[in-house]
Each structure stands twice: as structure tokens, then as C-alpha cells.
Image (tube, rainbow, N blue to C red):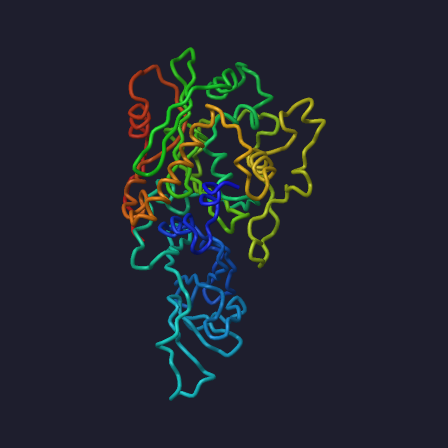
Amino acid sequence: MSDRSEILTRTGPGTPMGELMRQYWIPAALSSELRADGAPVRLMLLGEKLIAFRDSAGRVGIMDHRCPHRCASLFFGRNEEQGIRCIYHGWKFDVDGNCLDQPNVPPHQQFKDKVRAKAYRAAERNGLVWVFMGERDRAPPLPPLEACLLPEAETEYRFVQRKCNWLQALDGDLDTSHLGFLHFGSARPSKDLDTSRRDLVQNRAPEYKVADTAFGLTYAAHRPTDDGTYWRLAQFLFPFWVMPPIGRIEANVMVRAWVPLDDHTCMFVGIAHKNYMSGHGRQPLPGASLIDQLHPNTTDWLGRYRMIEAEENDYFIDRDVQSRLSFTGIEGIHVQDQAVTESMGPIVDRSLENLAPSDIAVVRGRRALQQAVEAISKGKRPPGADDPAVYAGVRGGYFTTAETGDWLALSKRRVAASPAPIREAATA
């Protein structure tokens, strides 16, 4: 593995990319996973073993799972009376890591004020738990990503674990040309298809536009059509957020994250308005459903949101269906993505790649990450870390227009004219 790939893929404590990730808020869990005075939940994030719990007052704590006394796991602790109590010797800690009790130490020998559990800053908004794993006093406001500002009742959350490095999963969302093959390879232009899908499968080799932005990167595939130009515009937002063109740009209020759990595992976190697929076209295409199946969650470090379709069952590929109906023989868009990115191995050897012009957004995304890592090493702050307002009002999506001119301006006008763009700032 090249030194550059090593830098971009490793996110554990003390690594350059890990340092970058720790400058941003990270979606960690659903609020519904934590019950007041309920059992702690194991979390693996950026290679660190953590526990999350909700105290008696409803506050969320996220901390290193090891008790700072003798390192027994606080996962087995008693969550009671405003804190988590270690079952080994009874030491108790609040959500901020303060030591509240040392019951096995005589009162005149206690030193509660000198002991702290390693606790990270946590916040909740609209049904989602966030964690900031950098210095607590440098935590910015929560990012005002449009989909994250929706009321919980209007929001669709989706967590799915993926057994590969976070970057190759992200690369997949920066690669729009695979859509016409992996997902719609068997589709043919037809009056039965909605216009956007028909334009997509009629020309599977589009041209591209890419632009660096204050929040990361914007790219668009464009194809000439009878009605003008068909644009598929996507956003990459530091450090791991993507807004792919799943639906019409006027309704595509959604964002997804590729959160590193460890270097060989990541978590897809999808956040969207429940109607973001409005107008997308519902004609059934073989293999193109959006549904995947999940195992029941377990308490293992990597026991949450695991797909039933997996390498060990070849993602239920049906070779007969592949030969007759579906390009892949694998059912489900997410499963298809999972199969190809996991098939590359836990961390792909990028020295074996032969990149093409269609990979321009992948290349530029990696370059942006590399530049941000280098900037941090020189004491500079990465994009959006101190000014998350740059994320406000950003949206991806597809549209067809006969207008000409600057492509970024065209897309921004489309978003501004949408029924209810969400731009309000948010605070932690």
C-alpha cells in the first residue's frame, strides 16, 4: 500500500486521517438505542472501543469503555442515579467523565477530583446522537446539513455496516458512472421509463464537471438530451458526507455518511426526508430495489446493523437472473454496492488501479482529503471544522434543463426554487 493510501485509510488515534476526523461531529447512534438508566451500548468509532449510555436525567454519555481505575469494561457497569458505576470496585462516573464515587476507598483517602474517565462530548438532535472526539473546547456547532435539520417525524434514518475501509465506500459515492451498469445495466431506453432513467441508460458514458468548494467538492455528470442537458450533481462534504443524486434536486433532501468504525469496517448512515424519492420514478427494474435485510443487533463491538447479504453467502447472487434479467443477479441497490466494495478487500490496494476520466471525482476527493491532512500537520484547520455554516443549503440531485451557463449557478437556482429549502443554522 502506498504511503498516501495509508494516510487516507487509517483513522485510529494518532493517525493523520484520524486527527482530521476528530475535528468534526460524528453520527454515532439513534437516540432510540439509548434508554434512561438502561444498558450501555458498545460503540466502535475511529478504532476506539467506547460505550454510550443515557443517564437518569436523559443526558447521553459516550466514553472509553475502560474504567480508569483498573481498566475493567464499563459495558458491564450499572447505569443508575445519574452515572455509570463500574461493577469491579463500584467507582462511578457521570456523562462528562467526572468521578462521582470511590466506595472502596476510605473517605479520607479518596481522590475523586483527580480521576476522570475519558469522555467525549455528545449531543442529540432530531433522533440522532452525535459525538465529538476531538478537544471538547474546540467542538463547533452541529453541522447544519439540510436533512439533519428536519423534524424527527419527517426524517428517515438508515444505518448499515459495511466490511471495508471507509474510503473505498466513499469512493463508490463519488463515482456516478457505475449507476448505469451496476444498478441499471439491464435497463434499455423505453417510453416506460421515467425521463431521468431513460436519459441515464441511453448514455452510460457522460462528461463531467468538478469544482472545489468551501465544504469539500461538487461534481456533476452531464448528458445531452432532447430537452437540453441532463445533470446528475453530487456533493462531497468533509470529512465523510456525500449527497448523491438519488432523486430530483428539488426534493433530494438527504445526506449519507461513511463513518469509520475501524480501518476494516465502516457504517453507512443515511439521513433523509421521508419523501426525498418523490418523482424519482417507481417502475420496477430487476435488481434495483432499495431494500436490504439486517441481522438483529447484538452487543458485540461490531454487532450493529449487519446485513444478511454478505460475502459468505455471495450476497445471494442468482446467476440465472443475472443471465436473463439483471445485470448483476444481486437484488438491491445497496447490496450491489456492498458486494463490489467489499469484494475489493478490507483495504483496497490502490497501486493496482488504472483510473479513467470517469473517476475524476474520486481522484479529486482523495486529493482534497490529502491536502486537508497536510494542512492539519502545518497547524491549519480543515474545511468546515470551525465554520459548519458552509454546509447550509447544500444539496445534490438530478435535473434536466435547456438553460446554459455556469453549471453550479444552474443547480443553486434549482435548490433555491424548491418548495421548502432548509437553511436554518443549528447549534450543538
